[in-house]
Image (cartoon, rainbow, N blue to C red; front, side, top):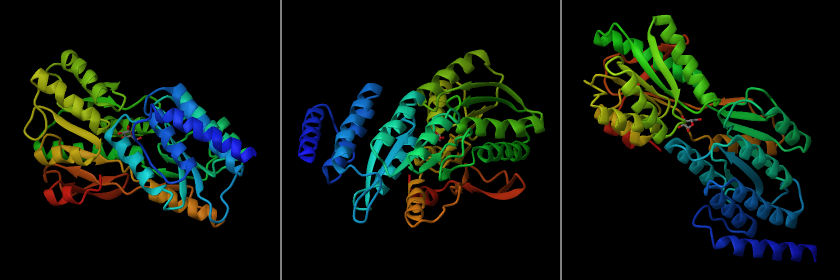
Length: 384
Ligand code: AHR
């Protein structure tokens, strides 16, 4: 009877929410359909709606009443994603939605946290209540995690952190992501080699940072600054563009007014910010890229941005690889088998450039690393 009532409740809630849902992940069973509704609700940018959707999942979870995956059952995975601020983020979400499917033995509950740390903590706590088998977190900010990770640990739910790091707790099974400081160091080392090859003796750089408190921002800022300090470059300003195109444009518009004629390098901490910065520089009559007044550099290396590198509008793009989900799948399989996964798993990343003028390699943190000139062949091989 309890099962019948729970099913009826779940069905009524799904029908009620169906009226306002548009599209999203579709999976076969009722609980998975609830998951798709959560996804849709979360992308409305409404934290309250996200919570409502999580309650719908509660009803479905009540039906099974279990706390772990038994043989033949789908493995319940909750993913608290940062948001939808960038093309990189879209690729990261797609990677998870492609891997954590019913076909692959998973039931994915996806929450888009819209860059709001409070929503992300709530999402994780809802996942605990819903009895997820595993929780994946891409932490919006690096700190403030120990309490909720302790709650996951107390409930015996393994957490896998992806992309950005958690810096104030080690209560997670594994982390899969990028070395952001290395990305920033690589950017600096490439700029040094490029400037030397072009006979540029003075660097006056403007930085458009990512979201404040994100380890991606912290690492890229630290890495680039380390080289800038070593080489005696001037960083005229470094402001938050929130990893968005609108943010990049707004910051660059203000830079174009405040530092008119004073800068020869713009470092954007992701591709979307670079698109916005290009719009602002176009409007201000500042030229950039190969042969321009300003050396323009970005991070992420989405395919659309690499097209711009090939065209010479971006001088270089330092990859941040968003395809973590297959590695997370491998970690979960290890945990299911009672094995201990690696605590830290680094994604492979490539440094892309528009011209072959700085040499074929740079040395980053003592290691020789390739520079890849973007050609049509390189573009054709890109997965995202
Ligand atoms: O955490 C990874 C960063 O977050 C990517 O560089 C950026 O595009 C995203 O928003």
